[in-house]
Image 1 (cartoon, rainbow, N blue to C red):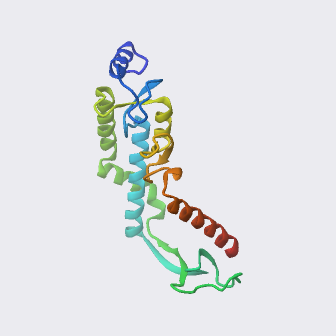
Image 2: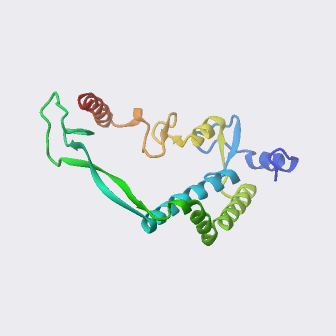
Length: 209
């Protein structure tokens, strides 16, 4: 069902009739939001991205060999950022849990010239194209049925597209979905801890430089 069709407009109007924003309660400029709904292009991109990451790991285990090489950098409790071992710090460093940095260096790749071919063969074997078609069909059916749809005002809908949600405490500011509240609604002690941690990280970064 096309979003500019008469049928969709009627269905949209019927769905929003008498509703308010599920987040803030506003009745102005409502739109339909389907949580986790993705476009066919997004679905295809996400599945291919996950498949590529998976194949790289398979390829790494099957065709590649690595050596661990020290970089000459380390980090410790008082200076958690990686820095040269020769760095002279303004304050005496705490060498508790000193950690040497190392990187993996590729020393053998037996399938290097066949990576693209092996990848496409794996895509066929894993049925990735069929999976994409199935997921697109599911998303289209969910979108048209409005099964998991909610009404959001334009302000809240825009925030949702950025991975934000309304703070459950003040119900006026938005927060990342990773956090329980917005910064202003944190207990005073917590706010001070966050600010102090940010300040310390900035100072350590300057010292490490």
